[in-house]
Length: 321
Image 1 (cartoon, rainbow, N blue to C red):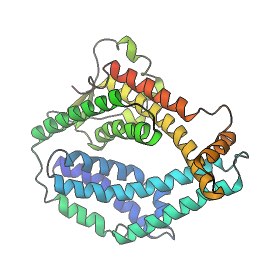
Image 2: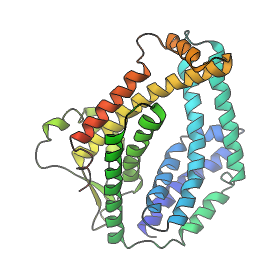
Image 3: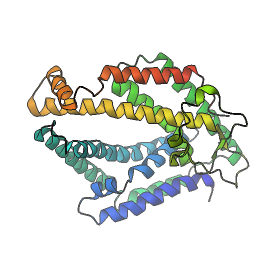
Image 4: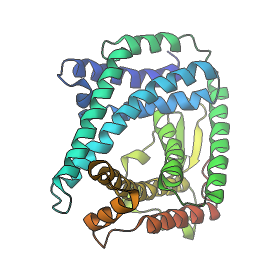
């Protein structure tokens, strides 16, 4: 079996196993959420997204949409379930707000259960169909594929670099969250490609500006452990220190995004449960979170500062060899 198909098959097999286990449960969607089915779904989605940019766009775009619906469903459950759990012990947040998050988690779970049934994920039909379709794809020769993926990375890096330089960072969802999605795909591809990528260690000491990014928690993160396949003559190669710096940026943007979406979620809950205007709901949100919690404007400024400094240092453009 060719390596390209093998990477897809790994995550399809994992999802198939999780689907079979979930099918035996009274609430399959929530079972998949608890089993972290989102991780293999994310990586499978990443592969489909990447390969749609390389060749056979129609085939891989269709697969991407199918897996994205599954991953999005799990992500929506995660969003509200995490909020429900986080605010459960918080005495500053009213019971009806906590109930709102619980109800939304249940609503999203019910929606995903319908999707699982409609698209035949639980019965195994979807995985079987995808595997059959992948056998019809015209895969590139190994060397050609590595070069194509490398070129794709360079194009994506250039797009992200421009996005950051042009971004005004005045919206949490469309700016910060969207940027994090873009940079996170670079990391997800690297992991999902299973041996086609490698990290090239610099022979010299890291440049001075990189030291602030090369923290122990970043260096030792399991998401930065990439093992190159010895069966391949060439790999998509990243400069290690810049790949680690990218990991730092993803993590920091993730923290800012979570803080910002927490404000948005509470405001949404107050608006829906108390029929308030956005301004009125925001007042209650600020009171519930407390004076020490950063304002949205502060979070947006921080995201802008770290992102624009990151590209000004040339870190993104030095990522791919």
